[in-house]
Image 1 (spheres, helix red, strand yellow):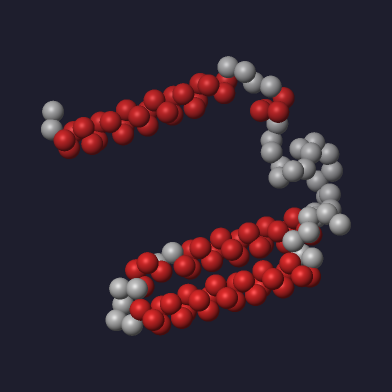
Image 2 (cartoon, helix red, strand yellow):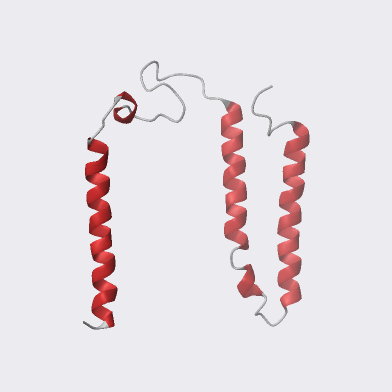
Amino acid sequence: MNLVMVIFIVPLLLSLILMTVSFWLPQFSPDYEKLSPYECGFEPLGDARLPFSLRFFLIAILFLLFDLEIAILLPLPWGDQLGNPLMTLVWATFVLGLLTLGLAYEWLQGGLEWAE
């Protein structure tokens, strides 16, 4: 059997085995918690018009902001291959400094405190 066939067959078999196990395994022991829908920390049954915590929203926005920072800085290792790698370092330092200042401001304003 040549290498190309092995490269196609092994992942296919592994995927089929994992899909089968993930389909059959949860059905062996269903309980109330597994069968109930997950509603982001709220009780699944009750009033749908519960007030949404502004603190939770703020933490979620900050998480998205710093997650976006990673996506912006991801091409940084390739940036030092440019003709002027010093400019890449300057822009990366600027972005990180700006985000650090924003984090410090949020911290000082108490935006990262989950409970008062």
